Length: 314
Length: 145
Image (cartoon, rainbow over all chains, first blue to last red; front, top):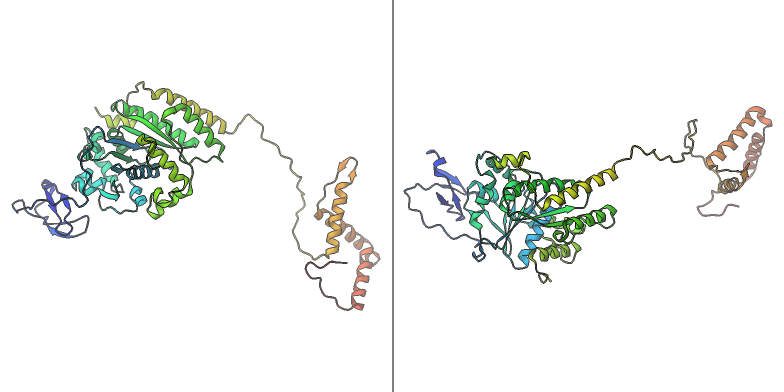
């Protein structure tokens, strides 16, 4: 049953079978308004149109690119890369959906938005899919993460069958509506990361140039190979060196070694840049906060590389 | 078949993909990095020349010296550093010079009492101070003659 908040007109999906007879009212997660739950016999008006209209479903399901920004090691710049890649692609004219699967939920913080709902509500089915999205920028939609995702992990873990497909099934309504779906993952190896790898077709790995990250990359590559057993379309498409500091001798050497291993999959490096760490504090992307900085230039190069068009954002 | 369980436990079957070669090379490179960064147990610890520490306890104190004596002390240290004693270059700190000179004067004062050189010099200094007009302290940067 879909009920509509009379105050903000948002739609909520409610499982009637789980409602006891004693429950008479509901509270809107968006505006906090309490209102009586309409009985099944009541005349329900047509649900209103979604406030933020999603892009027209022009792209076909097969042309919608799904990219995971992932590595089990933390602190390598996954969220920074995911947010700036998604924002860059949106600036270049593509319709982009950024999905944050991290319990820290920092993608919304970096974009300076405070969504009332996100991936949790989508996966638990509490809200209709369109209500879970927030329009963070022009052509950029966000499906926010957050602490509540910990509960979703338990929900997936309890599933006996097709637990790895939970995210894919939840994101089905957005099929073909975007040009790119960029998925930011949390560090570590858990049920949600596995779900992400079953949903996406391309993986982008940010690698900070230090020994610990090489160890993390090795472990993650092994895990990725295991997932490829079941999901043959999954490919490691991009390796993005991050925190490049030419003053550090080892970082140059590691970059050369990685380039020799990954060849064409290596992307232009993201240099260490203080503006990249300052920008989230202002809720801005690097293109908004410091468009002339080396960080912005490097992420523009990455956007061109991912989109396969050298003319973009120039 | 519990795919999720197998992936979480790392029990998923391994297949040969184009990634395998890279994984192997990456593992080899990581071992090389670890080996390079590990402290070499076989190698002797590097020995740095350490100045032998004085067994006697020392204490930092502040006494006033005239600027003239400070200049002379520095000149004496330089002279001692330039001079060679039996082919060995002397490298003596100002503290050592002050301590040695003071010890010699105090030992003589203890042995000879009022006939010691230090006693006589100090007596002259006191008499001259009493006779002379009180003088002002030298200002910072003022030449001492």
